[in-house]
Image (cartoon, rainbow over all chains, first blue to last red; front, side):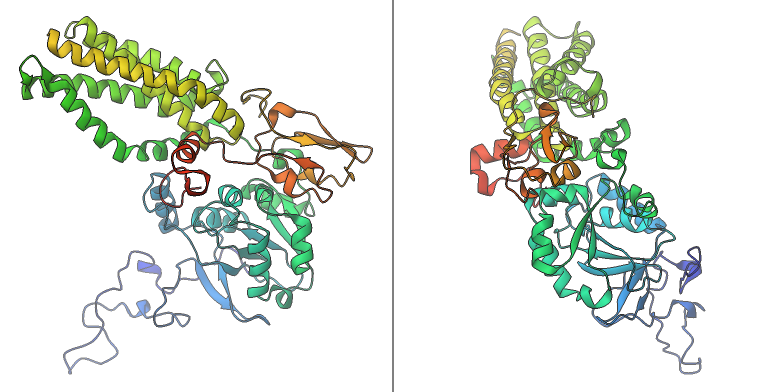
Length: 398
Length: 96
């Protein structure tokens, strides 16, 4: 086994900072032609594996020869560049373009008996898998899931039976390994029918753990997943990391909401008052912010402790608390109608956003969500309507 | 996940015990331990734990399990109401 801690880097001083992008062509003929004019960074020469028209991923150490052609050997430790990319994608940046090419990869120096781990081509997922295979020799078969994680892709069928069969054949996996076993993440089972994979390409599916981080232990135990590896969890941290994306998804809608708020706030006795629009919009925006914090932050974080099974109810509870805080804030400044409008809107928004969080959880059933929505949406709309009427009414009254 | 329980008595999951061949695949793939196999027969031990992901049904070689699978996501369901099931997506382009 190769030393797993040995890193191969052609350019240790400027490994990932892109310090090699300046031209190395010498224009002065008195200079030695192989020396760049603007710095002695000869270590930044192209790597032997690079090809015109391709960018070589920074996590590829080299290519190893197999009967089915060269296979990239990838690092099992994340670099600063990976961590930065993963952080950005958690904030919703570049979320739908964060992917690696499907196909066969490897970690360590796997032979024909080494295990084959199947995963999605979402880079966040791929990174978790290669990291968990630290110190191991294994093949990684990456499926084309269009940059989506295993579970969601399996739900859509892209992480599916047909894709596995297609990818096993395209990579000529049967020539690379002697055994006929694929370790498929358990959550992939939503799209993968084990008995059909076996029929379609001769490889037997072994259900791996739910979480990539358990892969090492799973392999060490002889491909056995304990009960804890088989269950999904939804810890405080797992809920917390979803919050930035929840908020990010609101972006476009917020713009329209602000515009509508501005218009509604200006309507009054004098047809339209810019001053009133600006002054009252601020109060409205405070209610929007309170609703978002209550529904898209507090409700997800406090999920297990909030009363009620329906998410709309949980959001109503956090929304009521946030709404009361908004009332206290504007108690002296706003009229009764305005206070009513602010409270109704905060609660409705929070309830709606909490209900939207159902899509990010690993335990809500579609039948249940639809049942909840049929009851909750009319009430939420009523509250928003009431809030708008009260808000406009206050414009005329004030 | 016992701390996280969603609406009870809604799931569309059904098991035809007569057709079950006791292979244990449902027990292996379910992320919420809804199934348990006893004496080569699967039983549903936690019906309300089911989130209708559909993994058990497509992996049952005897086709003994039925469930209407789907995405338990309000954003997706709103879109399916407006645009129809085929064109619905839950978030940005190509979201889950």
